Length: 418
Image 1: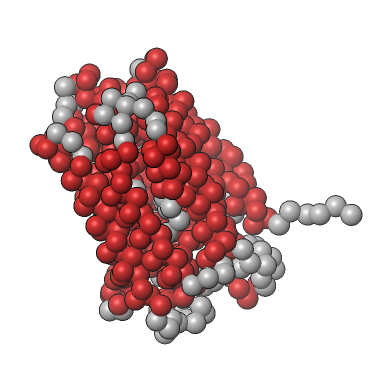
Image 2: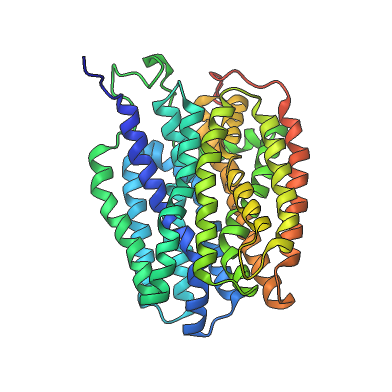
């Protein structure tokens, strides 16, 4: 007797591909810093500020993306977002002025990636899964690493051999090619009479508020609770220490120490390999252990790793550097599954996507500040040492703050709208 694949897994597969498309652009910006600076004579602070704007717009779009998805449908919003990413990426190939870099990278791609950020994955996981929800959230989170893994080494080589414009066009082409696949396979939620994976029709969450006003009201409710601040501020540090620092500045920092860009890109892609493993494992652990304690461990170990980084980076890959890459990769965004689960426990499944949108916005604000801060430190101090140490201190602080999330939480069926 043949076994029928639940529709949830098909939706999960195309969701993963879409998240890979979003991460493809983000993982290549660190490769494009130097060739763009050399061609146009721009400074590191200018290019890193454009990336910071992209990250900021990306993060601030995410909470309202949940509203757009509720009103217009997840599918329509995601398709529009893929188009924006492709358009913004392609337009950089014909730019001549710095403001164009800010408009293309910062605004167009920022809005596009913000609409299909991890909030998108969290929403799909909540709509389509009851059983294995933590694992699926981990898989979606790891999709960012997969994009980095698939694209970064090849894009680096293409940028070196054929120019950064060709490398950029490949990322845009991937986004465009995914649009018809996504349109054919994806569904917003189970149809009438269809149950999410591992559940019943009663487990399909109610739609969150669908107006900006309702979103802001929910935000007002959330900020009155200490748990929201613990989630938002620890995730702020997560963004600071990953997207804003390592993802944006690892390759140029390695180049400062004499390492070839292709080798540095390979190391960053290796981070992606172990992140894929670590984040999926984190989803599995989140289904079995207290997610608050998982955050304590993840942030604490990440902080210790960052303190070692200035002393292990060099022109060649030595065993201490390999240890850092493996260790940091496993912990890269392992924080996402427990953070999403804690949003569900504190604010209810029906509203978790909306609240996580605001928590994720904090993540990307942290990343934006870190990107600009590290670029400024590099330009005026001549190296990144202070940036690594500051990030390590922040991670240890986040580990301590995460202990406050062990308090009793709301039942998963509770709602903000009561």
